[in-house]
Length: 295
Image (cartoon, rainbow, N blue to C red; front, side):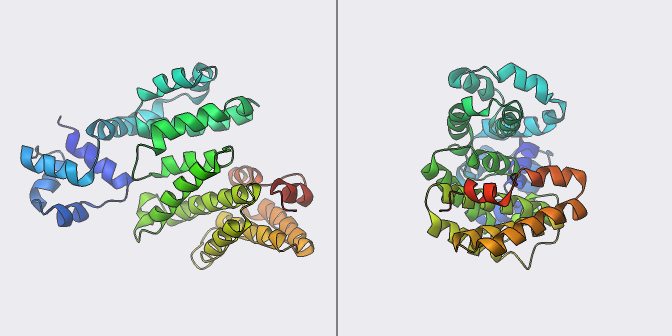
């Protein structure tokens, strides 16, 4: 149990919960909590129970996530995909249950990308969606960057609009936290992930004839203009403007802006960023428009 304190410290940091916040809310001894989280000593039974009840966490999940973070660098994604690619829902669930929630999110996100690359995604969508729901999103109150990365991939393939929208609202509640950026290595990374989630949600809303909701998310997204500080986010933000123009049936300016964004990508983004951004583009503006079913 000597790693329990550091494991809980890591778990809380991934959910943007500060130790000071825990101290203020539980009224437990500041020095005792800091020593516990730094692995110097264990908490007394009464204090430990108080802490667990207040945070409403499962200790097994805390330990799993801590170990997952240490073990993740040893993964071989191709080998892993070849191992699980033919699993049905039950067998995949059994396999992932041994990994813990955090690692499951990472594996499933990579699984979606690999299945898409191999052209096998259509046969896997229902399984991925059901397993993601059962093992990740239905079990967590806080999402880390890895869970939200899984969600970004899931939005683009899921047919269950109501469920995806519910998870999206959970993400927005996290985005609204004043210290949201602390979850990430830098501010640009957090803004990029926020934009990707909103852009994919806009697309999903359009496909499900929820234009009013799509317009609300576009309006919310446009409020980020003053905080974006990298070219990837700027171009992605402009791409939401293309969708707004499509919704209002202003195809001519929408096409001009779409083509300008695509051209700017090759000039301003590094090769890795271009590949990531190209996933949002199709062969032509008309194909892009049709992908939103905007008629």
